[in-house]
Length: 434
Image (cartoon, rainbow, N blue to C red; front, side):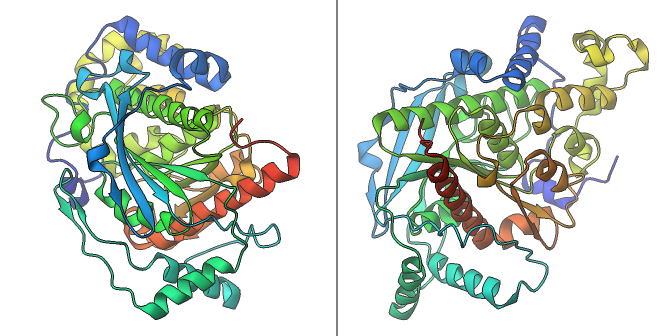
């Protein structure tokens, strides 16, 4: 195994999966595997079981904040996936940022430019990037007391505001379009602060509403006894993913039924990007998708990447004989199967995005990959090949740098994906909120 990097201590001081593969009944474990199979083989069974278009959302009116560019609201609802979640995670919580400016999609002749942050893209790319850096400068004021975090706002002057407005006016405003992007969290991102400041508020200035959803097993949804991000069982990873997919799809369909929004997208980095891909792969409606530094499967992340040093392999070894027979891939191999073998098999079966059908509008996918990613084996190309018509944008550096140093490019990618979604759905006459 690789040596444990110092960055993991920023996430947790305890190993992950220290209680083994699963803490409940073997029947529940097998039901989780069957649900993953159902989602990969078609959308109907997953929708019939775990997706609601009529969530009973409890809005916290006392937490509403009215800012110059957006209104922030907080809400909660009972997760449709409570069967697989610990009781602490049954209530899903989110922050919603609704913009006060109109969305300006890029026109059809503008979309689809290749991007590589590690090379000189020429004057046109540089000008576009600089324009959006202006739009995204100045992230607003305030802090989230619930996160324990406080972020100082960037200063803006009148000239910067004028330049940002000019950048928006370069494409026509479309007040009839009301896009919503659900932002899913990377590993270790508890609460809302990072996604609120780095993504939600800047996207609101671009006319894109965002919903920051708290991840099951994180923040206020963390089960008793769990230390930071150290999930107790491998099955907790399945439950986390199933919960996020169920909750994200239910939010989109509920808001579509209410006609609150009429364009939908989902995005995330690392773990959040993986979950976003599953949401888009199961969704019945066309969605914009922006996965950043995202593995095509979680298997290599935990058996080859640096996170392999974070797994409690001794605990997994002790439980292994009870679970080997639950997978056809390992059932006949008996004692020759190691915990690494079984981890590869079970995570490839449940998390490999290539097992899912491509999203309905592959042109509305903009993937960001890092050239020196030590966490994600074989980044970028595997998913790009699985999604014909999608875009792959490369950035220099590794996994952590891609998340913290290229956030303005991430916002540009979200805008690009929604612009592609508008162009594709208008060309076919389809509704993005069908």
